[in-house]
Amino acid sequence: MPEFFSYSHIEAAVQVLEERILTKPGVGLILGSGLNPLADVVQDRVAVPYREIPHFPVSTVEGHIGQLVFGRLEGQSVVVMQGRPHYYEGYSMAEVTFPVRVMQVLGIEILIVTNAAGGLNSEFQVADVMLITDHINLIGMGGANPLRGPNLSEFGPRFPDMSGAYDAHLRAVAQQVAVAAGVPLRQGVYISLAGPSFETPADLRFLRLIGADAVGMSTVPEVTVARHGGTRVLGLSGISNVLPEPGVSVETTHEEVLEAGRVLVPRLEALVRGVLRSL
Ligand code: HPA
Image (cartoon, rainbow, N blue to C red; front, side):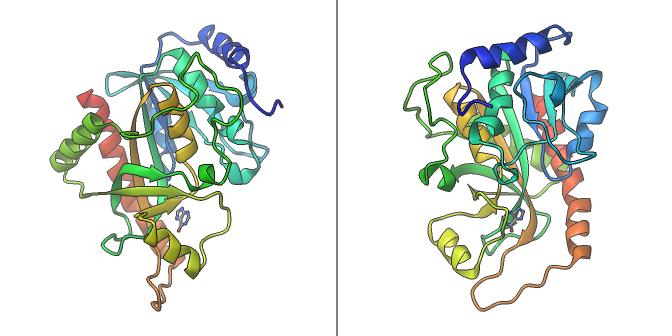
């Protein structure tokens, strides 16, 4: 595996996919937090396993789904990543974000990303959905930025702008959809850590101090690469757990986590479907 991918690596993957798909996707979806079944209901479905796509990150975990699903969802031509690589699994940032590059060359203009996150904002409750307004690229600041290495000028400039990373129009659409669907929608700043260990109390104090509302272990690398290539982004976090305030002990039971999923999955699905319908 090369340390960085060149445009020809991306083209090799695109070529394999273009031979198999019927229509060009306009919207890419990276679904975390139990939303993977949405890929099963895509219409006119063409699924391509990651292992059949050159340079794609393939999970070594037995039984782990890893495929790109092409087709139509709520009237949009979509490509869904069913299975998402994480940095903590040992993939490089280049590998984690390679699928975004491939989706960009295939023609997506919009990327919708969902994830599970821990709530840092004291107003948040378990099973809330947070519309991501901005992110803090803490791992990137520490050096693991997915754009490190030779710049792929076919996509964007060496020093890309990251203001307005989460598209204002798409956020407005999501808010309208949430009102219509009766889904309460919070807003805030997402921070991603490398993981896989959870946060210490001192970590949590720091994350709150620097302005994060929710914490997770994904999304920021993919969004950084999406924005470099000019792809518009909508991000939604499902708050799977709330993180303790100093001096407060919060006990999270397995039952609560399952219950959060039962509420979150239909909420996130309603939002994603509603946004797709409104595009
Ligand atoms: N911390 C980090 N990542 C997470 C959490 C959390 O509490 N919940 C879901 N993803």
